[in-house]
Image (cartoon, rainbow, N blue to C red; front, side):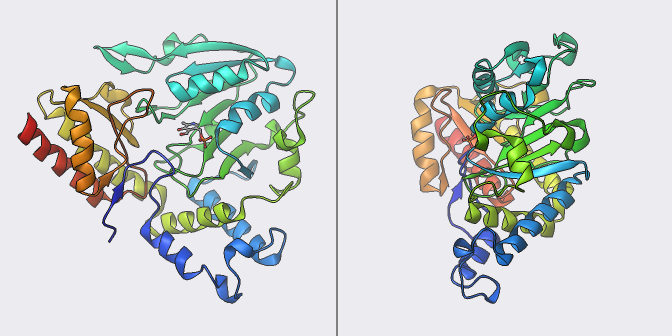
Length: 362
Ligand SMILES: Cc1ncc(COP(=O)(O)O)c(C=O)c1O
């Protein structure tokens, strides 16, 4: 059992079992006397890693055959550029839903390549951050796609429903909640997520893209920013981040062994409830700025009513092995990121600590 619970938003905690397997296999992957790190990407051994990883992801998310899975280098932020370059096509315009810092970054980047319509923005309900109801969105039926962030990692705001976009492809940034709950892939044209939160270590971004959307990119698009190229070369248009890919494979195998996405969803709901209950029952000592309808199950963001207590909270939490709870520099406050690999025991320990801290300072 690990002694420190890391609540970082990413790179984030990995399952202990995954780290132990990686450790055990470090010098000898599957009897080859080579580390997974040393396997050539086109060799038969790494092909095994690739195939198993894709097959496990397909099983976990029930990905239909007419979707391609691509394993790309770089973080999800590269998709802020690649999505417009590859999907705008002749339509040259797209709709973006701005619900926090990440979706804002995505649309700011897309504005370099086409006419971007901000179809809806984060709003307030009862003084709390709230998602704009779909009835208020100004979607353009001629848009090439609609982009949104399923979970805003910094703001702690999450969609608990899937936007309806008719025949316009829906593009979802799932960087901080992929594999944390059931996902109906067929509602999407493209899903992307970087690995370092819920799926492994940094360096890899996974794309699930409907085959018909793999089309010619805008003129001048760099070769390695072209989905068509990556699809044609089965994510091997260059040397991929093989060790990150291998770790993602271990994480997916671990998730299957936990009972898959439905099972982890039950645990994730319980984990989030422990913390939100603690906040809601604190008589205003802890304050959630997010409306209960769209509170994130992955990134629990809150403040202490008396701001000067926050550094003390962080310092004392760390003494209890509860680390990286500081909110994002653009927002401040406290943020507990509780991805799949965060054990329920870690969340219970944090809830206990919050309770004790409140009794002492409240
Ligand atoms: C929702 C979301 N999208 C995109 C990104 C950017 O990902 P990366 O740092 O892998 O480029 C992040 C990073 O935290 C994120 O949380």
